[in-house]
Amino acid sequence: MTDNFIGKNALITGASSGIGKDIAYIMAEKGINLILLARREDALIKIKEDIQDKFSINIMVIAADLSQIPEYERIYDECKRNHFMPDFLVNNAGYGTLDSFHKISYEDHIKFINVLTTSVVSLTQLFIQNMISNGFGRIINIASLAGFAPASNSGGMYTAVKSMVIKFSEGIHKEYKDNNIYCCAVCPGFTHTEFHDQMGEFKSSIPSFMWMSSKTVAKQAFDETMKGKDLYINGGINKFLAFLMWLTPKWLTNLYYKLIMRKRP
Ligand SMILES: NC(=O)c1ccc[n+]([C@@H]2O[C@H](COP(=O)([O-])OP(=O)(O)OC[C@H]3O[C@@H](n4cnc5c(N)ncnc54)[C@H](OP(=O)(O)O)[C@@H]3O)[C@@H](O)[C@H]2O)c1
Image (cartoon, rainbow, N blue to C red):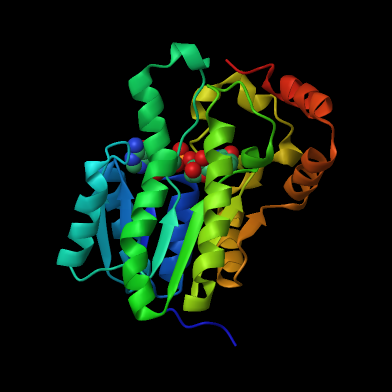
């Protein structure tokens, strides 16, 4: 028997492109109403119009910058005021950093932490209350295979924040699964989206067999979270790499990382 989610609501962060946008279409097809959130309001409105041409669901757009902590309560208030409280929360917004740690300003480090972790924790805390009252909640946290990788030199932060999201998701799942609230850390590897657009030669140095489509990652993220998994690594190659990272001595994984990162701008 397939689950019937018609009429439920989902909040998706980072819905203006890539994995978040593809999750929006997957949920729309299932009759789930959508709250699409990102900074680029024009892109969100275009996606809203296109989805509403195809599916009869309600969609609300919220333009918000998740690097700004006061935005989290404004997002909550806007959902509440519009009687549009999410049953599904997709914490997906994110980006990478390129420079060395010391070249990135203190303010930019804080913004990065806010988008990739503080917003995940805060939106979960704000919206889980309603999920508990309703006896239903599904939280998809887009982490990364990088969360299993040895510490990288991409600003020193990306692997650190993604491993935090993995542990956080597993903890939430453990604590609330008996309330019928599932939380899954989804861990994609290299995925075709706007994420790598600024990385030039680095992108072309990654062999094609290591890439997945954003649509496949999005579909797996939804399906595996609904099954009640607390952790999902997308694709056979990425699962194998995660296993190798767990198995392999630190010096060897560091060497692998050095080779992968050598074309980084
Ligand atoms: N692509 C990969 O290879 C890969 C691999 C592993 C994990 N991931 C993770 O997957 C998630 C989605 O990334 P993607 O690959 O789909 O990249 P993407 O196409 O660049 O999408 C990123 C989304 O995040 C939003 N965003 C960025 N900064 C934001 C901010 N300050 N406030 C609100 N929204 C913000 C962007 O919207 P606006 O610019 O409109 O704000 C956009 O919708 C990220 O968490 C990323 O770390 C990606």
